[in-house]
Structures are given as C-alpha cells and as structure tokens.
Length: 385
Image 1: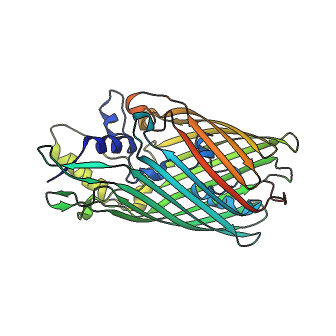
Image 2: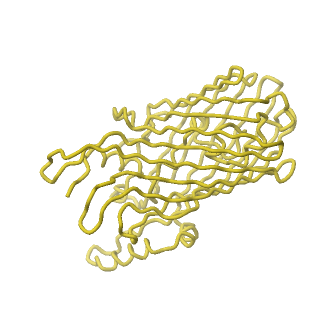
Image 3: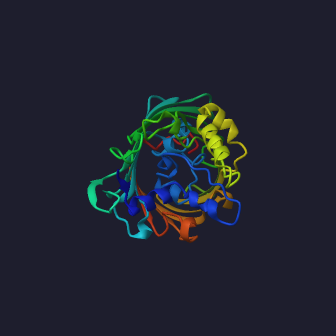
C-alpha cells in the first residue's frame, strides 16, 4: 500500500483551504469541497480587482464569472488565456492554473462560448511505508464547458453553460477495500445580467450567477464516499463614471455564497459512533437538498474592486477580498494593470501578501498574466460598453 509524499499533502492542504483550521481555539468550521480549483479566479483582470467579475463589462473571460454578459460585448469575437502560478511563494514552479476562453456572437442577440481550466499539481512521489520511492505521478484537474447566452430585451440577458470536470489526483493509488481513481462530474451554470449603461458607457449594471450545479465526485470505487463540488451563488453590481470620452472609472462589489453544507464537527470525543453516523448522513444528502442545507453555514466572501481606464488603452485596477474568519479568514488587497493595442490586450495582477501560516494566500507574491484578443467590432458603442 502506498502513501502520497509530504509535498502533495502540503499542496492539497492549501488548495482545500485546510481543514486543520478546525483545531484552532476560535470556532472555525471551514466548508471544503472537491475540485477547489474551480474556485480559483482564472482571469488576471478580475484578479486585479479583488476577484470582481459578476457585473463588470464583458470580455473574453466572462464565462468564468457571468456568461450572460457576453451578448453586450461591442466585439463579435473574443479570445483570452491566463497563466496563474500557484504556491509560487513556497518556491514551487510546477504547480499552476492555465485557462482559456472564447466567445462568438451569432447575431446582436445571442452568442456561443467555450472555456477550459487546467490545473497542474506538479510532480509528486509515491512511496511505501518504509519511505522507499516506488513511482512518480503528475496529479491534474480539468474543467471544460460550453455555453449559450441570449438577450431577453434591450438590457437583460441570460446565460446557460454545461461543464465537464475531471480530477485525476491519485489514479492507481490503492487502499484497503478501495482503489483510487480519477473523479468525473457534470455541472451547469445559469446567469443573468442587466445592463443600464448609456451610449457613453456611464451607468450601472448588475448580475446573478449560480454556478457548478451538478453531481458529486468520487475518487474511489466506494459510492458512499463521493464529495460535493463547489456549487456557488453569486450576485454583483458595478457603476461606471464616464468623465469624458477618454477617462472612465468603474467600481463594484460581488457577494459569493458557497452552496455546500459544512461537514459535521465532533460532538463528543467519547462518542465515535455518533460522529460516524453524522458523517454518513452528511455524505448521504442529495445534491439538491445540500444546496438548501448550506444556507446557514456562513460560507460567504466579498469582493470590492475598481478599474480606471484611459482611452480604452491603459487600465489601472485595485481590489479587496474578504472572507469570514470562520471560513479561513482570507483577506487581501490586489493590484492590476492592463494595456491594449489594437485588438490585443495584456493584463497583469498582483496579490499583496497577507496572513501567515494557513491563512496566507497561495497567490501571495504572485503575478498573474493574461492575454486577450478582441476581434471584429469595437466601433459600435450602442451596447453601452
């Protein structure tokens, strides 16, 4: 029987936002899920604004936050790609998130889109109980989705997406009574976007996005051990001030609520039977009932962000992300810049280091890089963007 190396254990601990927080003095019960890479912001623009993205202006990466924004884009086609180093602050160079997304407007009312996220956990070592190296592995996770969005009026649009998820963490790893395997799941998104901006781009917009509504995912042949994926309810708003044709300032806020119930806490150290029953009941919940039972778990975070644009070519961004202490206490500021020339845009974001130990963000001291292509359009400002 094999065990994972300490290195993989450390990576998984950071990605899952560390259940070890439960051992602290304060009452903390972090809501964790499988495939947490779906919660990593895969866009350098949003990353520079505190992960803000539900109601900002549409771009090639809109499908990661609110697909319904796409029909309001002034461009007919958009393509984007982002590279996000992970745990760079710990000296790891082979752990990263790659994302790519794109859309094409079928007409002035509708658009199709597709996106992909690939998360590499680097190279890990499998050893036996004596610490002898047996083999190497490269755990990885993938999310691929396709979507369709359509205007329901001059200002309102809806977006629908279907997602396939593959999580190959410990394929071939064998334990007593079960064999580890790659996990697979299917999920869907539904989103709304309301755009009240005028022809000069000034005004407000709002959005709602319910994402990752889908099946549980399992990593062994034991059907009772399947885990929840990170279903999420998000709502956001933004307002843009157009001082003149060259200067614009946008600021906004997002609120996200994880639709996953918190795992049961220990009731009594001497009553292991009751704790086992509670854990079985937790896993036996249906996906739909788990969404409603998650209402009281407090898994909420807030994003505040701002973007200043000059001549639609130079952009300066900042933001703040807040998470309650009971859910891990991640709180940090972000900075970002963007440069656009003709159809090509470059975006960079930086997360200001904060916290320590398990509360230190895996993206501390990390620069995210994004590339965007806006094709076929831009002259028509009637969309208000």
